[in-house]
Image (cartoon, rainbow, N blue to C red):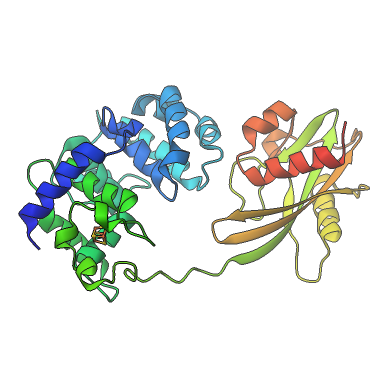
Length: 351
Ligand code: SF4
């Protein structure tokens, strides 16, 4: 590999073609960190509005550390993978308690909750302009094609290549250039080789195998799950619980729900859940059937509605229950599964 040509061409291309993304303006460690965590498993166009709102509400690590976990999760609502938000919050607390400012060395950053090798490298490189390589899916694909690698190489090979290629001058721009090339030109199924600044160096292009490598990874088979959801309404308030089962549904608050066991019907599961929560049977009305995906789970959810008075039932927040107005439901429910259930229910049971 002609490393000087690779660096020169990539840096020149990046200067002209890079996307204007909000986290690229004023790349402080905090801003880079938030963006990198949000961008895990999530596309840039989805992240942009969340990033803006998050930075407006928590402009620095201190404001994030002082916030309640509930406030952080609320702003994360809809982005999914909620452990990312919890870890951000924990890490912000750790930074304010143990360091005077955002740490600037790789081992200390790596020790923070929710930060792995990629994110630590990205913070060091993008925010502190340190000569630290970063390897994500885009970088792996670009390296695989540039080098014409036809078997699945060990992960370490990608880190070695980036370590060897990253220049002492402009390490941040170089890392971003490789990632941007993977995101915009060296696309997974149809790479746009005629627009590529390093086409002349690319072995896969020379061999005509750029669309064949890297081989697509076998997708993990989706797990089918069925759940019964209770929508219990008293005086226009809906019952929420923090005892969320099954655990695959994320968020602090949710509608009472339970997995439908083998051989059990949806109404039997809903009635059993009703007895567990309220200690009695209620005449439940089927009101929704929703398909929803969470990571590799395909969920079919059956909603059951009941509205009336429950004078003798006491459900307290300290026991993990609360009655929420529709507005509070919008704020507290972080899984879109529950929002879909409420919406379907409103259509079936108007008023
Ligand atoms: Fe990717 Fe094509 Fe560029 Fe090679 S020439 S790096 S396959 S876009």
